[in-house]
Structure formats: structure tokens, C-alpha cells
Length: 114
Image (cartoon, rainbow, N blue to C red; front, top):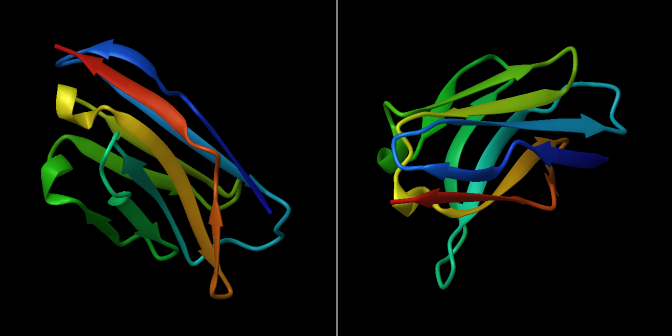
């Protein structure tokens, strides 16, 4: 299984970015797909995740600004990030869980300038 993330970049505060992560190498959908992030000097933290049935969890810091969605037919998860803040600056990692196995993408840098 491989997870390929895309969509990171540099944006000004208040702007938007959309991250995508496409999973390959698995014939069925994942139980959970999500996004984590890690800022310099900090631990990796959950940003948002979405279960195969559609339920979602968000970190308090992104509620109301970020929206996670998925396309099970494509094994792809998306993260729409609006009203970005400088504190959202981090490397964002795609995550997928299937059959109790955790898979990680390589990460994509998101930088929000003030």
C-alpha cells in the first residue's frame, strides 16, 4: 500500500489549500483515513479523520475551518483547509488504517505566512 499526498504549499494567512491523498495497492476501502501534522519541535497530532461510514473527528484547533472528505471508490481522502493561520504551518501526513494496519504517506509541507 502506498499513500501519495499532494496539495501542500505556501499561502498567506486567511487563505485556503486543499490536500489530497490517494492510496494504491489495496482493493478494498480503508476503515479510517485521515490527516496528521507535525510542526517543528512538536509531536505529530491528529488534524482530522473520517471513517468508512462517513463519521468524522477534528482537532479542536481546526474545527469550523477544515473539512475532511473521502472518495471510497478511489481510496482518496481530501482535506479542505480554509481560513489558514500561521500556527497551521506543519508537515501534513496522510494516514490510512485497514485490517488493523497503519499506513503513512511521506508528508506534504504547508506553510502559512502572516
